[in-house]
Image 1 (cartoon, rainbow over the protein chains, first blue to last red):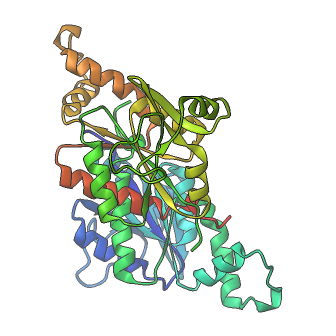
Image 2: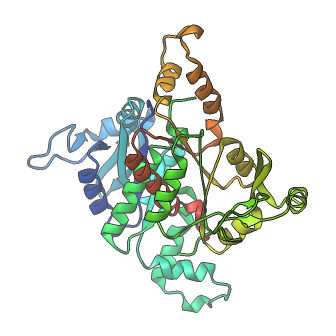
Image 3: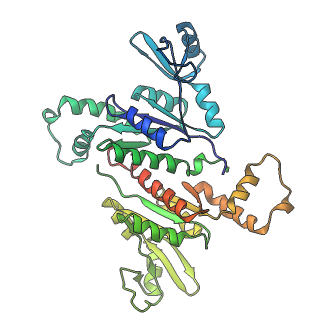
Length: 195
Length: 195
């Protein structure tokens, strides 16, 4: 069955384990391709251009931004990082599923430019407590909300833009769910070339 | 995490193996509830009302149709069969996922009344040939289409109403994909009570 490739975006707050999940997912599903970022930072020992990163000058990076060649980008300290639209789009065009692991702001930029991307939010276990509070009929007082939950709540506001929510209580369980999402999306009618 | 129940509808042409898949899925995922049909036919030896079927009179069945109490219904020879809306809706309301296995016409009736239902089309392997023909750039002559493929094509026209397509080449592979779909849908943001 011919079908388009699907762009899977794993995202969530820092420290939630999305890097570990990405690595494990790529090991278990070797027909998934990891996207390669464009960066202005210097290559480290052993890093190869077009393999670990696409290494470019700052001037070239800015030009890519201006020409809409990046699905998302961000400045991290003095370096810039971005996701090349062409690399992702041409792989999808050839039926290759692509995996992207980025922060929440980056994921929302991608979704805006590629609404068909599948956004997966990985949340810390503390989100349980927040969800309980949000869905509870009894309204807790504002004082009872720790600053940590308040931060989670800010992140949670973005969840409507996401397709899936995974609560990373247990890495193996989360990984299994992630694999289910990939398998299921591959059977989705909207991802088939039938029409 | 609190969430609504999801209604999964397994559907497809007769003889495609959807009954076998339903049985195997219920065995593997015991937190799925099979819907119970309403019927006007006589109970057979050992069948229990409210367990195998809800057994009703023809008059009572017609009243249910008139009052919109059936998600879908059909006459099979001299008997009538239907899916009770209340049974399904109240289980979903309590967070219980429900599984329904019905023909294509029934599935489309359900989708109309419950657009949030997850429709899964199980297709015979012969659909590969059809899909190839449909996606091929070279247009085959009308004569080259066997009547079997023509029938499949009619069914395939309904596929846009479905969420997922499973091609039943291998029952174990199809079952694994079906389980992935159930697991993935349980993580879908739209099925969570967060908002």
